Length: 505
RNA sequence: GGCCCGCUAGCUCAAUUGGCAGAGCAAGGCACUCUUAAUGCCAAGGUUCGGGGUUCAAGUCCCUGGCGGGUCACCA
Picture 1: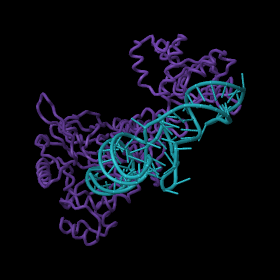
Picture 2: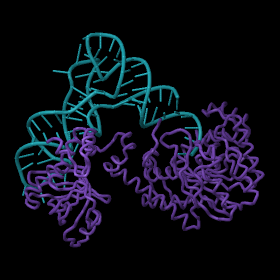
Picture 3: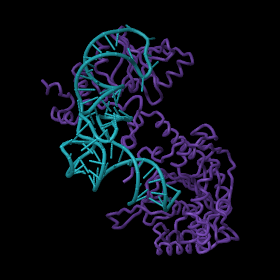
Picture 4: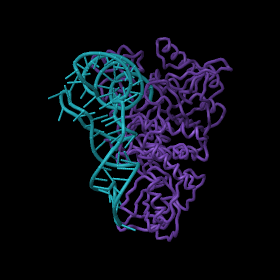
């Protein structure tokens, strides 16, 4: 008898028995309901559903005064309140929540009893009936017929406190999404950010392209790569750390404006602002320069903020930020001078700058050259203070191997990074198109590598060769899509804007 | 990788100095025809992350391993 009631019409007894052995007590209770339903001839997993409106549509139409008559709504039951022979239930679909009103007098004693017995929170159902308002004024479906669409065997997380455990939220994201409405909104906002960015670029003549993820030589950024192996080719390949060098080759080939929104991979630390795979937008504009890229950043910030938040006045944590262009422009030298009293142009050698830093008792990690020391000084004393959107310009040449040197001052380049609320959101150059200079930069990077800099660029002869054929004067930009989404959704961990983040260790 | 914090019922959380491991939600039973974190009563639910140790006695103290979170260092 026990075995018979576990038989499923669509699977063998053996499989069913094995499955039931995997269930805990709560799940087993629900699985027995599935058996009861099947015995009554009800398929707990019917192949199709019927739906006349989404919940949002039904709500909107009703409020506008339309007479909808009988509607069929579908969704997941998420709460139940019963008082004897009537039950109020909450049902949610992808668009919203609506209350169901089930009454024994309407459904019939048998159906009503079976509903109470065999339906659970988490089940997908189809409710047919008419819309009305309860005496407390809540829009409600007066249910004439209720049908099970998909039985949930496992119980939902707690209905009031939601799912809080970080690990479960990330590893079983579906539980997080079904329980925490605000999490779903973050990912809807992310989609609006990406769509707005793409729409802006498309509208301005940038062509979306795809470049290799697997690269024989990685480059375009200073970072440690992931290494993989191609069996047939019998060689190592690297997962891209940036798209830069492939995209700029396209300008040699006479595409004038290109962009790519891509996953990049960097084999480095994992924390609240870094994941090993992340999404980057890079765009390049032939016959453009740094100031064109500033305009692109301002436009993208404005359009993405409008799409995500509907306003340019946003809150990020404790900061109020105004994203209305134009953004401030400050030379790195001036920013550092103001915050530390050190003039990097006076102390423009490694030894001099290092001595000044020690003299002032500033905490800066030991570095291998002047440029990196400047970068550290900036990161420690300037970056956290940049709340209003600010372009920092004139980066040291030593840390900018793909940027053109500033006319009249070879120590720095035509490069900016955009900072908002103490964080970096984009990086742009007037692109280096002089093949001899580019070749020398690679050589300099190699000497850094020889001195132990694991993030130094490798020589890319093929890229230099491309430049020998002539690349027009060009402005290029990279923006972190995840970080922009964080800013625009007020999230403070990158894991909260990535559906399936890599977890630590 | 260093340091700090956490891991207890399906979920959210308690547990005093080392002294019988508890509550709410969910799920089970009963009552209740306008509830909305419904309510009332009853019953059930545990390898306290794993392993080892100290102790008459360990959720609690010690050692060790695992998995998370925060922070510092590096990178975006």
